Image 1 (cartoon, helix red, strand yellow):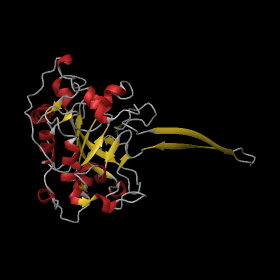
Image 2 (cartoon, helix red, strand yellow; image 1 turned 90 degrees about the vertical axis):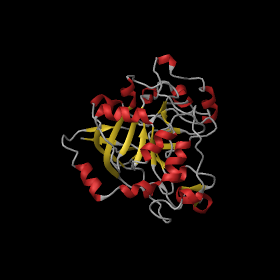
Image 3 (tube, helix red, strand yellow; image 1 turned 45 degrees about the vertical axis):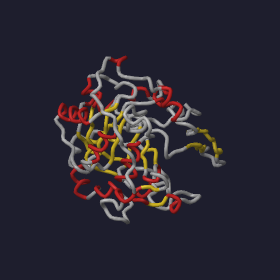
Image 4 (spheres, one colour; image 1 turned 180 degrees about the horizontal axis):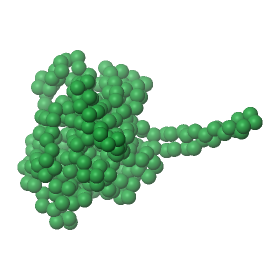
Length: 326
């Protein structure tokens, strides 16, 4: 869906609700969240010079513990295929042009083929948000002044190349399953009660340093109902985000495009506040547009989570292909 802005699409879906699926939403009170002033959010818990945020939780012990969860030698991919039928936002694009380079002159007739890609490879497909991707005013994580780290060739600090390979315990929070539906309704706001209910049903507890991944079922629309997919989505609200972040995740992920609910009925005057809460205030990365159908079907709620963002210098994010290993 090239050429459609998020703002326009949000407005088109303000009337979408839960009635059409017969799903009763957990009551959500109106919220009055506003970005905290710099004095309240900085320095971060890891000190004024920190640039890694929740990746400080990626310790040798956590990597070893995650590796110990691999017993069957089984892998489930949790990333969507990068293709030109993906849903896109605004001017984002992913154009692939196959390029037959040449036929080599030697007797073995070795031909050579390549691709030329024109696109936002940091912000398309299953994507991982870096800290420079979002701001509060002109400040990114830990109150770093955005203009001071910008250059014509990328960000000079906190680029996605600084994250490196992630390996930790992954936990699937199957909210759609808890609600008894394949897909939560458009703009359904996941509450703390929903998260607790899903975890209790799955008999799983969250631990510090987990990759906490939420199944809304929205991924079933991917490359099938692209206009609806980008017009809005179910996801966590501010209260649920703060509840999860209080448990010190390594990252928050979901099978929708912003992890959070969009638009938010309880925060009608705010634009994607969970992005600011996670990335800017707390230094917690977001993993969007996940493909969770297979992991949900497997019935596995705990696994070794592994992912390698692109080593793309100065990028604000990265297309990724996370995997669950058993």
